Image (cartoon, rainbow, N blue to C red; front, side):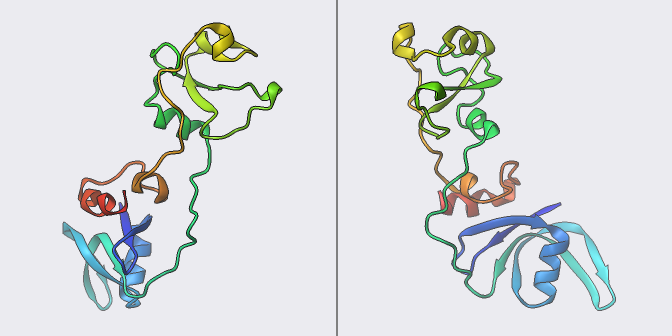
Length: 165
């Protein structure tokens, strides 16, 4: 069971285990906004509901430029596992401008690609191959990308994650 942690301003911060969330609630560092019905947690001081969403009582300052790190999994997720060249199912990533020619490992230079297109393209640019990208690679935006652990979001979190997008 995972719990969404909201900052005092209701922006999503992270996803933690329900045990960690319960400790924050018990220490008066957070309050429960939404809980899981039934199956309470029993403690010496009484029963506690399992928190699904908690709100911190004090505002936590987050550095402004929270850039999403580039990962293979992230590129595939951003492109919905579809090849940027042919549209088939992608299992690899490809540098639009090859690294051997100065291409960087950045969101703007990486696309998801199927093995066939990746091998055929090799060390060339799409223009040299006569290919056109089906999408413009860009850095992902929105709460799902900036809040750690929300990849498999609980449906109860949707209203709170929508605030961050």
